[in-house]
Length: 151
Image (tube, rainbow, N blue to C red; front, side, top):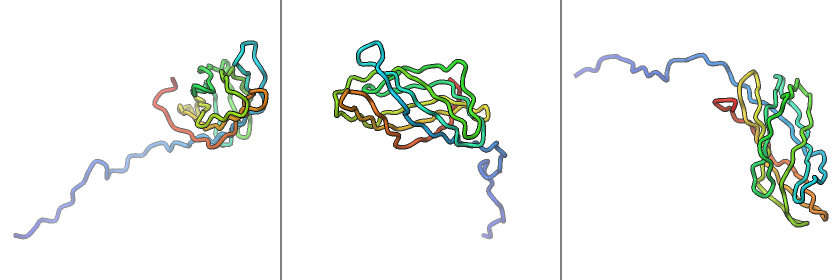
């Protein structure tokens, strides 16, 4: 029995043009902190720099860790950063750690738009508390992930 000459073609074999998603590139650092009016709360200022070539709009920021926490803050108006431009964001942070403590795996999460596409930028933090109990965050890694909605 001789086999016929055929080629199985799957839908995945077909090349479907898609707009390439360019991941935002962001630099984040803590630049200052000061005590707030409420015990156990600090006002922490972050510098966010757009390292990419595409404009970046920062929609919101939050710190979800239970020992270094800030609820999501919508930014109105939302800062628009051109290439190499930066903005400073001050967030109220709940943290009651004793001096000398270290919090690992904390995050600052930004909701952003890049080329009008929604992304989340995650910066993993290591937070050390000084002699006054003040937080000093060190950024360990920054990644960006596309989202399906801007919400």
